Amino acid sequence: MRKIKVAALVSGGGTNLQAILDAGARGETPSAEVAVVISDRAGAYALERAREAGVEALYIPFTDLGREAFEERLIRALQERNIEMIVLAGFMRILSPAFTARYADRILNIHPSLIPSFCGEGYYGLRVHRAALDYGVKVTGATVHFVNEVPDGGRIIMQRAVYIEDGDTPETLQKRVMREAEWVIYPLAVEAVAAKMLNEYGEK
Ligand code: GAR
View 1 (cartoon, helix red, strand yellow):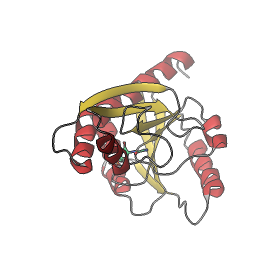
View 2 (spheres, protein in one colour):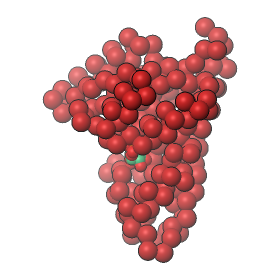
View 3 (cartoon, helix red, strand yellow):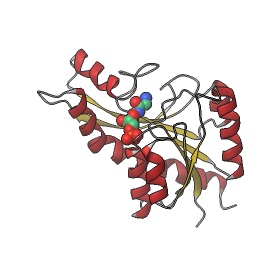
View 4 (cartoon, protein in one colour):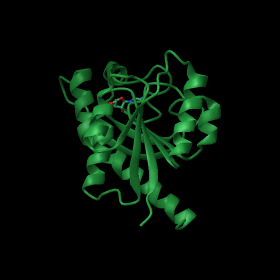
């Protein structure tokens, strides 16, 4: 059966990428296949994870090129590989409105809070969990959403809640949100969107 070809964009450790790759290896994402992993950072461990899984690993520098040139090279790389869906997995750059419009309803992101709380520009990684603890909420979680021109503002695809525990630090909370929410819902969301795309397009 045909699968939707997915590119994962990463900047760091890539544990969400790993969750998606592992789910694929277990046959849990039958509608999607990660065809390439692209990093804006040369040393991203996520590139290593891709190679270990037998997936092409590509580095496109951001800092040297700037956003426009980065996106030009990115689009070329995506087109050359017939990529149909983009998954942001700890990708720490904001994509331009032109890029997000070009791939409308085709870019997924995971954010480590229950959107609309603790999200938007400046909220990433541990900062999100620190903000949740500072505010004193008792429940947080993770959200998979489509990416549009508003940071963390696209349509929500899936969410899962995680309870905050006494004594949580940003680090302990980040780990629990990853384990209980992010690594669970991201593969599910990728499969749900890919299955819907296949359904809409039919077999090519
Ligand atoms: C994840 O917790 C992800 O939700 C978060 O960065 C981490 C990346 O970890 N993303 C954001 O904060 C986006 N605003 P990973 O590289 O191990 O998947």
